[in-house]
Image (cartoon, rainbow, N blue to C red):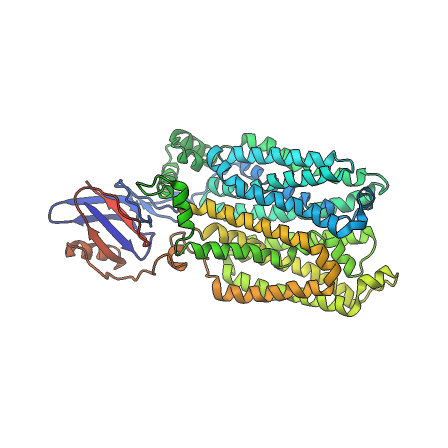
Length: 593
């Protein structure tokens, strides 16, 4: 007998008795979940969302239990300063850098150096998906660290050879692209639900903190090392290797993800690893419960029975109704994140301050350092307060509209005063309008990081169908680096050619992004992964009532009473289990011989 239940809510728990004229079966201690188009040959169903509490044997799940967490999880985040520090050194503000390379081709040189890194990150993010799926998260991070260190070493040893700088940037970028996908996934997979969001928030905070550190390292070497020697720019390039070395060494003491072991059917290793991470005995109910969650989720990740060409199946899934619109939103979010104009300040901040009339290497570096502080503060505000209070959609809307205001002012100030031309002519003056322009740069960085920087990554990590989530996240991550490449490649020419128009251009785009977010981005705060299906149109919303009864009316009514009328469809089929064609509706199937 196959009983198909369609529920309005996917987090029901407890036990039910299904009665028919010929048989009676009782299923205890399970939580009904949405298993799209799959028949589960098991009597015990566990939901794929360990973050949600459920009842097991009359005892509340220990998902909220206070667990002694292992500090090694933070080791995996050491790569983040590596990524951000790496992006700070080739902006050309150090005089020794200018004397070592053809600075008369400033726009071309800056664009090439920055964009080669972005090109590497694009391919790294895209190609790391099969590496992580085959070799595991831990080995993938090791490989990424080694690639980054090789690229960073080429740059450090370049001694003014531009070809080695380009090669090192591209290779190091490839490693960073791998890390940008693997580390957040690793953190999410080993973290308990109660602190998972917090740990991913730390990842984002460290990303901005690394950028801030890079700004201040530039300032420090400019203060302590003569600009007549190459060591002034070689030392920062060498310093960027330190976090990479820490990650390379620290990851050896980190365990593999238990979820990866489950994918490979290595259950004994999965149980031991999870027990060590949670610091609980292997037979503890929390460990057993979480492993059951992982097992059920892993079953959902498998293609339906009879599928032989998995690549074709996954490609088809990408373009199904309810999936293609999510991918479209994810791709646009990552594109818009870059089109906010953040990279024109992040990568070219000394030059931006130059257009505001800030002269002198020390002054520009000092002003740039505080921009890094503002971005880090914005990321802390997002992670600690805004992400779960303001919501995803309102954060994007208000972040776009409010974030455009500093850009409008900057464009107007540069248009009216042309401070860069005045500074070049030696006519440097300080006015209240000029100081407020500097404040606007800091406000912009804070607003951006408190909204668009974090929300886009969180949103793209939670909206995709579970069976193709890793693939979709890889695509959107690569898209983020692609647009970062495009913006960083074109920005130097925009600053030179458009001047104040550069600020107006990005301010206009931000306003348009706010309207787009209002009309096309659904809210996902507080929603389960199963809730994403009706939200994005993969299936119609379920009504809390019985809309059709199965062949045995009593069974349908009994189930409706058990779940407060949330059962919307019940179907009883033949006595023999059989494959069921995938349907675009959430079904929890209980199979009984």
